[in-house]
Image (cartoon, rainbow, N blue to C red):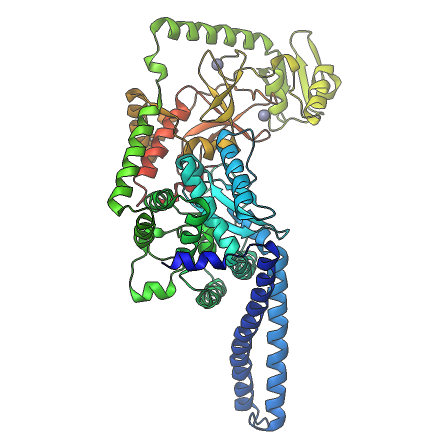
Length: 591
Ligand SMILES: [Zn+2]
Ligand SMILES: [Zn+2]
């Protein structure tokens, strides 16, 4: 067995790896230089020949011209290699991590904590002096290892993987990535991907900046693809560069890493299960496909067959072959592994706690909520005693304090009227307004006594956990306030299941979303909803580009207010989508 042999090669001390890394990066530098020498040789050759064609006095084949040619080629290729290489070393990893949106695991999050613990154990059993962790914000399943900006080895896993993997599977994944680090693959691949990232960065910079791709912008279309010839040439170039460099590194390294992972973690069947699960699920990672060789399974794992062509150009061996080999190491068959996955899934389904819809609440409860909302509405009405004068000298209102300050045309110089005290003046003359603005600058809620009130029914919100994520929750109307950065976690995790009623609504929404004419049906009532954190007016915006469902967002606090059932319906839609992921690959981006 190959695995036995490689185990003895496993470097026991970190300095050995670093020595290996230095040699490898020197070798890479040289290969890169050869590559550029060849390309610049051809390019300058073309220039010289063209010159000879137009200038009869210029003879390409004289020793003088040949010397010039050689010097020029050498200078160009050395300069480009140095530029590419040092740029990659300096910024490549940061670029990759930014591109993937990676963040550190949060010890307050149960799922992340398990990852932190597994990393710590692996650090000890592998003898690595350090092993950093990163989490990637997507529900899709994948992992990668890389050398961080500071040169320390790191393992990154997706939220989807943390949600789907059992503890032994997570251990197996971290062991697989650690195996890559121990074998020096990580060092080489990080460098290779950093080199390629150099080009990607160049081309994204050359692209016309069509729009600021922020998660909040109102009605964005998909990011525009400007397919300029320059871009095409560039991506072709970086693709050939990457393929060329990867050819140097044996394609067997995935299988070798699997074997070493088994020695480190002793869970061949767990690794087999998670690789198969990642293969079945969606492993798509957005525009990060350039970094394909870094991942546990290729981001488009379905398309790989075992033909000679694919073997030449693919960075990963076919998934089923890997799973079979691993199953064999655990004295099991592929069928056993599939059976285990099925068993695991049904156990998990049984453990899920069911959430029912607002519509399924008892009549008394519904009536109580209705009354509460009415009282809140009346209360809110009493707070609306501000009128605002527009540029056309018209009085608008009445508004409450939060609504006034949130008006798009609000400035401290605007004329306003306080109906309660019957005063009219510039906004800045009113102490209430001044105090509200002061608190806003201090990042405090506009009015302390209104903080943490439910935007829908004005009850006080309580802190709670949902799918392992900290949220604010309204015990009366069941609304939820969620940080935008926590959405992927919620959509990846499966602690709850949803009642038939919620599933029905999800089905209805799905149809409405597909028919633009009917989308109005989902529109929110035009009423004010103040952010429980800052007190400013929340904005009604589509949830994202795929799910054009209006929700309340506060862009300042980066939170979304979901009224009763809304989040659960979206979860149902997304869960169904990722089940039938083949045709819907792009569900990865939520924010
Ligand atoms: Zn409420
Ligand atoms: Zn806010």
